[in-house]
Length: 313
Image (cartoon, rainbow, N blue to C red; front, top):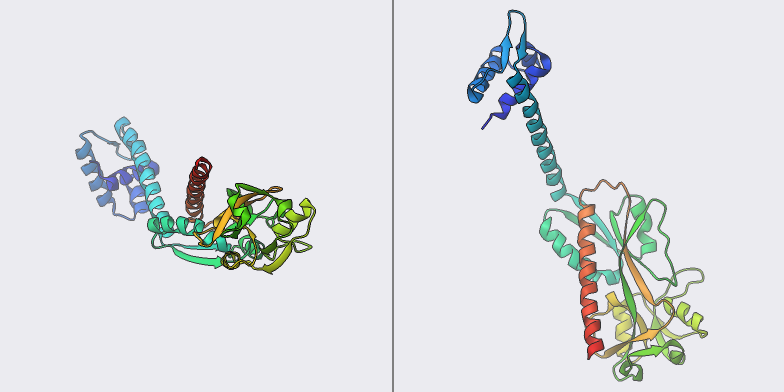
């Protein structure tokens, strides 16, 4: 196998046109350069240079070997740079923002696989609402932010922040065990006008939850008993018989004492996406988003299998 150090010397002789010039560039003595050149000629078995009284030039074989050697050296240099970049990435730092129900299954699934692949990457996790954390993405304080929006309450990211959609999740009607609606495959919204509801605080101006926006389109104002932005609280109150609720798919865990069904209504689903800043130099950002997309696909596949099973039973 050819010695890459000697290929480097030959390439430098080719560029400089002399042994003395190559020696200056390589910070070697002319005799050391001449010795390495002779050793390379022995390795390949052909003459690589023609020496004149006042000049030196490469033979045709020497020129071809110099060109091939430069290609090899360039590939090796690129490989070393890739390895150094990967080493920096493998021990880097990633800052992730997320909303609470994304922390139930979506984010943990993505992080478990990401961390198994990149165990040395330091992770900072920040919980908050999309409208609270979006400007941190814009300013570079957060690398990736898991966000949601409803068609009835669209969200606009700040300038310079791009959004990649991950999944659509349905809104479930959650009722206490034994509630008449829990025995039906689907309920129409107007049939629920007399119910007591547990809902979120909502956003916008005026501040309205998705429940209130949907009910307004159906022509009635819901009777709200309690508001909470924590779905564990909402599900607990439903289980206690304090009311019924609309809950997105990601927030649904194996909660005993409640039943779920579908409710017909205007565009009742939630879109989940990941927001990031184009040009973010963090080398781990793309990998994390890929793992997040894979986790979202897995959750959708599980939900579809469950839906097909429910329809067949």
